[in-house]
Image (cartoon, one colour):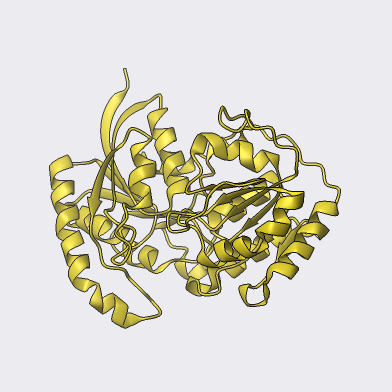
Amino acid sequence: MPISKKIVLTGTHLTPAAEFIRQLQNDPDIFWEISYIGRIHNSSVDTTPAVESKVISKTGVKYFGINCGKLDRRWFLYTLKGLPETLKGLFAASKIIKSLKPDYVVSFGGYVSVPVILSSFLNQVKSVTHEQTSTLSLSTKINSLFCHKVALSFPITKKFLKNKFIVTGNLLRREIFLNKSSKFDKLKIEKPIIYITGGNQGSLFINNLIKSSLPLLSKSYFIIHQCGQKFKSKASFNYLPLVYIDSQDIGWILNHAALMISRAGANTCQEIATLKIKSILIPLKVSQQNEQIKNAAFVKTQLPNITTVIPESKLNPPLLLSSIEKLIRIEYHRDVFKPKSNLRLLKLIKTI
């Protein structure tokens, strides 16, 4: 009979977090009692429920929301302004940790993870923080001072390669390999599908760009647009806007899309490279340590003939349309991939 252990997860990088939850729930050796600490709201100015509160709740995991000030490496005054909320978050996280008495705490990045990792340190709970990108975020650098291990998706410079830092790779969600969906299988789509996403919360720039381009785009393509909560748009001819893509549908979309238009987040770029999807990448022009520019360059290196990287400052509807047409004309055969899991993070947890 499996032994029982308690684990608390935290962070805002939901793709690897959701996959890790799936791995924990299917672990044949240990019955994991899983809890999640995330934000109450998306931000101090956006009081809608945090994205992770909705996504994590669907996994059956108990969710706890805390307020937390944002850590900003570019504008230190913003960090100072958020210190009172950060201290409140620390007290709230510590209260939850003391109540749950977990055996482990695992972070998946974002400023909300800092008070959780710090409270685990103060309460002598073993902890690991997972970094999805090729650079260390500010939250990971802070967390690394207090956690037992830092799990890296990519080898980082020798400066950080100490005993605490271990390369485990990223956690790609298994759902991306599935090409069936009860929702989308019913649709009779006759045009090539273009999947557009700006990340979990959407991208204002991409949303407005698509809005301007839609009259021409919808003539030749079927648009599936993951637009986030703030963008108000209705479905129309060959256009389907969605606030968020459910995990059971994402594989169908990725495997049926003739082309993908996206920001260049770490998880998105790794999924594009893994599934070999034609893509137009629009790196966020202000990202920590030029992370998204590096992510886009990674995809371009992996898939040079079917990847177009366009700086936001140069992009407009005519250039977008011409770039789409150029990529669509390229003949390219995508392989069928079998689902596989990266269990190295799970194995690391069991060894600390």
